[in-house]
Length: 209
Image (cartoon, rainbow, N blue to C red; front, side, top):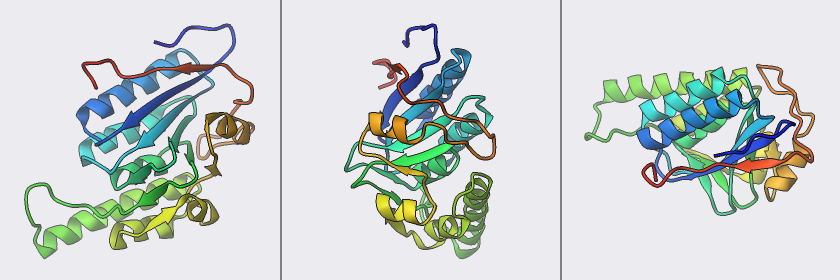
């Protein structure tokens, strides 16, 4: 667990794999704990191919409700935030990527077999509206977000920053903390103070892993 300090620190954790109830439970709890500790921010280094809609929405609700900035950072290089990972990124206070990472391909799929045309349209329209709302409220590109749902398109890190899908591209955590210092989030209007702060790393317990 993170150690208490006299001055606010940045909490950092890394998650990799499917967005499922175990990962969602861990992230929701970590967001709450970082807020209780009055951390300067929580940075989540993420690498995911996607996952379950219900787990994804639990994470996003925790992000939106957090009183401290929650930063999702596609890291390390070679990682991705696909499908459910893109929605989580769109719901974060700060969205960042490392070089040689990618995001997108957010078209919903069924785990129980093929959907008929009516159900597919309902699910896709719901998903498109959800991600557009997240992107718009956080000052990002809603048109591209919808395209990622309807057409399964993807972007590199450089393309994502150029098209206003993420705010920062940084090679590593120190570079990211320096780059986002002073950034004001939308819609919460939280100012990040991350340059030169202490970093407290937290991680899943062995049972959660």
